[in-house]
Image 1 (cartoon, one colour):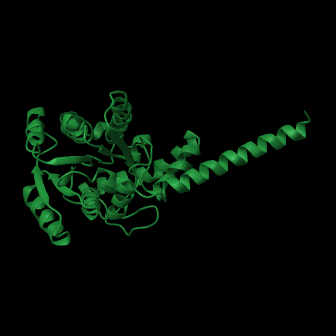
Image 2: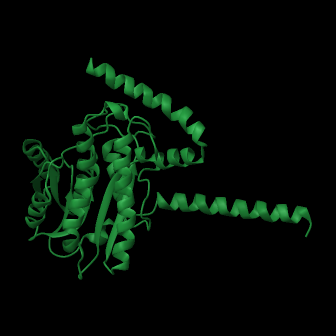
Image 3: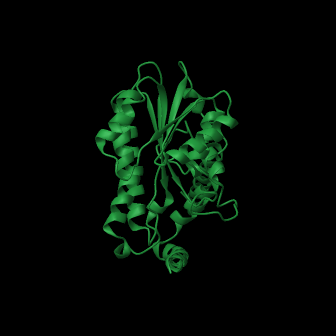
Length: 306
């Protein structure tokens, strides 16, 4: 076969593959959400952890918009009550309950007690959104307590809660959903070593569980969504942009990805574009681009402490 034909064939195959990937990308971020698949039975409920504000509050709003009653989890009862009142005024025909539990110190017994309090509810959705401990500083400057807090809130608590709720979510009468909110910091970002590691645990747990429930014959969709930089949250009030969406926009993107057929998917299209470019970069280029930004954030946090 002439070399020109070989090159033409390779070029055609490459163009076809690239076009196919592009069309799949477009479809992923334009297809309708399948969230209402989980809206069945009498009075369906969703549990959202870390729902007092930020992305968790936004997800609660999106679920309520779709007709779900929502259990709002947090550790501050006064803040939760204010959030509940706000949502109740916004969604007249939806019920809201609060669940108070300090995730940084909750024991397995306390988590089981929380789960037991939900026995009478038709729970079809669990959103493990809660997280924290994202201090931008060298590992050696973290205290032992800070390390334990970061691991507890981002890894231990979601794992314990998911384990405790699995029997309730393993239903013969319909499908259920477990959504785990992660972070793009799990890709090896400096000065967020333990935070990124704990979020990577969350993503790996999701992928493993997604296969496990399928093998076990359980009708549970397990979806992990790593999140990039957002605004309108406790640690960031900067103006929003295409690559830095508001918490509500990010929440809507998370709900929109339900039913996409993937185990792990970058929820927001702007973050997906950023991740695509980063994944193409050689490690040395990634370091050149990312390290200065993280150093600036580290220096900014150190100045705040003075």
